[in-house]
Length: 333
Image 1 (cartoon, helix red, strand yellow):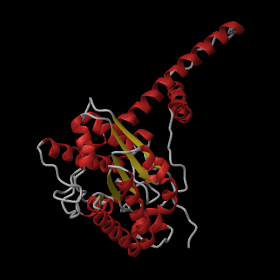
Image 2: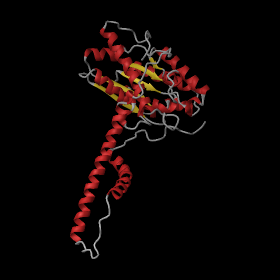
Image 3: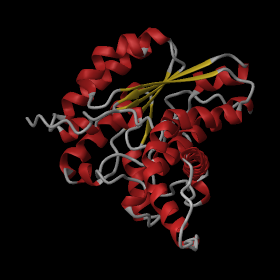
């Protein structure tokens, strides 16, 4: 078995403004100084110039330095704001379209939908590895759990909605099962979104063993309380698709677990493949340079499609169409 753990990297990409300023300031100072040197003509010197007093020189230098620094700081802050805005309005550049060729469905989500209709607090646990934690996003704000929370709060502004990010990089079913009780079941969630299987493929773990552990985990969640469960299968990305046999088995077996336990499944692998094959998006437009993790747009679209399903289930409940969780009557997204 390979000991390579692709998700063993840091799972949180915190990029505070101070760090950005430290990076941007040297970059900004060089062109600023060059421009000043070109724009300001050298003064005409007299034959016998009077020496400047030390106090005048110090004041002038200090004043100019302070002005330059303020200008650099202002430009750096503007740059940070531009980056945030760019990530925030990401769909204005590449829209998140509903996949047309995906045959699987996520099913209805009656428990969380009924809670939202009744105006009761809702707790969602996003359980998984680094693509749940948000590795590859430019900011924690842009990982999929935070994107999902923002979408649902916009849709239901008076609702008390909590989305807990329980993603830990490098893990798969064996490690997740050790923290299932404390980080999922004991939280008493209304919805569990369980992303699993990618690391198992990359670590050459037996897909059958992984599926069995996931089935046991889903059973424990269902036995402990009333929670909707949605499984999320591996992502379609170069590092995964270079192991087609293992990836294919994992996707198929997780689908069977969802069917057997009457829970939903978000077919992430097929959704992402449609982005590339049907919507003609280059893989680089939704996967970062490591060939594995999603970027801001990938996480945003993933969250958007998940949120659309929850909103659709709420709409069904409001219309009196209370579909059992094990009846998959509509396409997700």
